[in-house]
Amino acid sequence: MATPTISIDRTDPYHPPRSHLQLQSEAPITWVQMADGRQLWVLTRHEDVRAMLGDRRFSSDRRDPRHPSHTPYVGPDHRQQLIEMDAPDHTRLRRSVVGEFTVQRLAAWRPRIQEIVDEAIDAMLAGPSEVDLVEALSLPVPSKVISELLGVPYADHDFFQENSADFSRRDSTDEEKGKAIGHLKSYLADLVQHKVTSPGNDLLSRQLASGADLAEVEALGFLLLVAGHETTANMISLSVATLLDKREHLSALRDDPQLTVGAVEELLRYFSIAEVGAARLATEDVEIGGSLIRAGEGVLGLTNTANRDPDVFPDPDALDFTRMARNHLAFGFGPHQCLGQNLARIELEIVLATLLRRIPNLRLAMPFEDIPFKEQGPNYGVFELKVAW
Ligand code: HEM
Image (tube, rainbow, N blue to C red; front, side, top):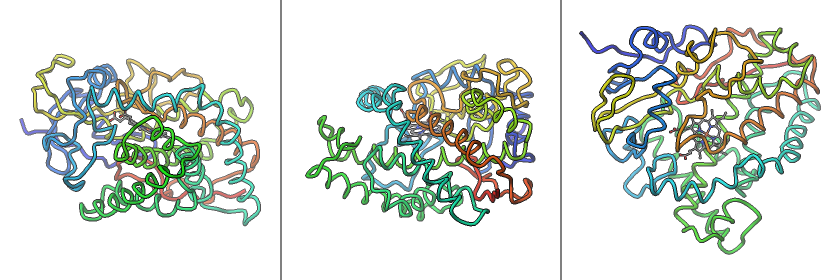
C-alpha cells in the first residue's frame, strides 16, 4: 500500500484539516508522508499523543537531522533552546525558570495585564469605530506583557514582532529564517549584556543574578519573546472572531462572565493552534497504541485531532463552554508542556471579559468567510480581523 500523505489545508476554519481527521478515524497511528516529502509516524488519538509526549524516549533534540523539526538554517553556533533540549539539561534549565510562571506568581501580574488591556481598548475607543483587532489588541497585549516580564523595551516591538513572524512563517526561505534569527539573537545579546551592568526588576536580570551564563539567558530570552506573543495573539483573534460569528456563545458569555474560564479552556481545545508542535524523534524502540516505533524514526503527535477525540471529548466538534476541557493537549503534555500556559490563560480571560464588557456592541466588520486565516502554520491564527462597534 502507498504511504498516505497529509496536508494542512482546511475546508472549514473551525475544524482541523480534513486529512488529519480522516487519519484519526481510519488509521490513528500511521506512517505518513508529509507535504514536504518527509516520512514519519503520525499519532492522532488523545491517549497516544499524551503517551508519546510524556515518554522521555521521544527526543526534542533537533540537532539530529532525522528529527522532524530539524532546522538546518540555525547555524553551527546555535545555542539549544529549552524547547529543543532533553533531560537532564532540559530539567535543570526548566527548573531554573518555572518559578516565574506559576499561577501564584502570575496572579501578581493580573492588575498590570488588566491595565494593558484597558489602555489598548481606550486607544480603540478614541479612534475610528472600525479597526483591525490584530493590530489594535491581539498583538499589542501579549507583546507588551512579555516585554515587561522579560525586561525587553516595548518600544522595540515592531522589530521583534516582524522578525519572529519572518522566522516562524512556513513560507519563509531558510535564508530569510536564518536572517531573522540572526537579528533577534544579536538584539538579545546586546540586551542581556546591558542587563549585566544595569540589572532591572525582570526575569532576564533575575536569571543572570542566579548565576546563569550569558548565552543561556540570551537563548531563554529569545524563546520566551518569540513563544510569548504570537501564539497568544492568534488565540485572542480566533476567540473574538468565533464569539462574533457564533452569537449564541457571545450572549452566553455576556450573561454569565463566570463562564470565561471555561470558555478560554474550550477555545484552546477547539483551535489547538500549535498544529504541528509535538514533533519528536524516537531514541529507542517504543510501542505506542500497539504500533512499534523504531529508534531513529520521527513522530508527530497531532494535538488538533487529539483534542477532537470523541473518546475523551463527547461531541468533540461542538463548542461547549461548560465542558471542563482542562485535559486538552493545546499546550502539549509532559516535560515540555507550555511554560507560559498560565500567562496565556490570564491574558485570554482578561481580554475576552474586558472586551465584551467595554464594547458590548462589537461586531465583525468583514464577512466571516473573508477572514484571512493562517493556514500554513506553524500556528493557526488570523492575519487580520476587522471589527467595528
Ligand atoms: C495560547 C498560547 C500558547 C499556546 C497554544 C502554546 C503552545 C505550546 C505548546 C504546544 C508547547 C509544547 C511544545 C512541545 O511539546 O514541543 C509550548 C511550549 C512552550 N511555550 Fe507555549 N504556548 C502559548 C503561549 C506561550 C506563552 C505566552 C509563553 C511565554 C511566556 C510560552 C512559552 C513556551 C515555552 C518556553 C515552551 C517550551 C517549554 C519547554 O520546552 O519546556 N508559550 N507552548
